[in-house]
Image 1: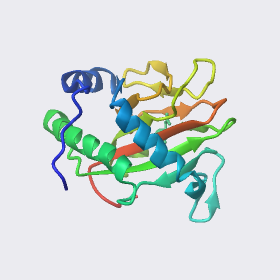
Image 2: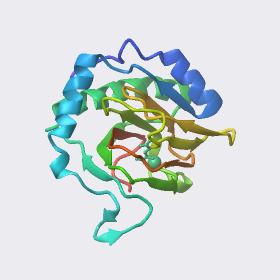
Image 3: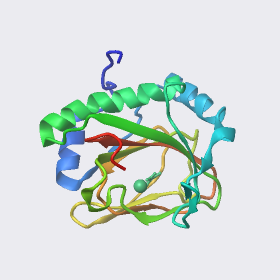
Image 4: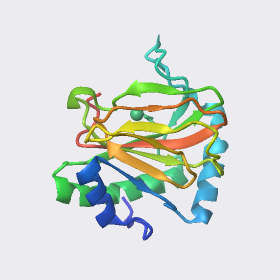
Length: 200
Ligand code: OGA
Ligand code: MN
């Protein structure tokens, strides 16, 4: 694994404080525009490989209608984002004893009309997912385009988080949340900081 650092634009103190107080945090202007540009290119050039997220092991669910592509070592630009999250997880482990050992992630594409109904990423705390981090990488987003992340924080307060480009929404994986139907194509990377591998 190559040495890498948490990007300078990420205020680690703030991230730790927000997660502690509210169970979620927002990182805006997460990356340089140069990096964003490369990432959008990598994502959009693979859109034809995305699959229906609703179908898992041949079973169709109606909870979500987006399309996903798991990120592997062939997606070199997205890997840098995973590395940055992995670096951040060292600080999270020191602060909260989360024991994060791994980051798994997929690209997600919500076309107009697609959504993800209320769910938790780690129901009953069973699957090793500690922290979810969603990075939004479409080039623009207008506030009447829907597609908000609707999230209940650890104090049971609900928030609508707009999927602004170059933003990361990071939250405890056990919190209840949903993706409101988007009116335009919505591109993201969902990543999970995990305390173990392959239990799911
Ligand atoms: C997920 C998810 C939220 C978002 O992929 O599990 O809840 O804002 N994503 O895309
Ligand atoms: Mn989720």
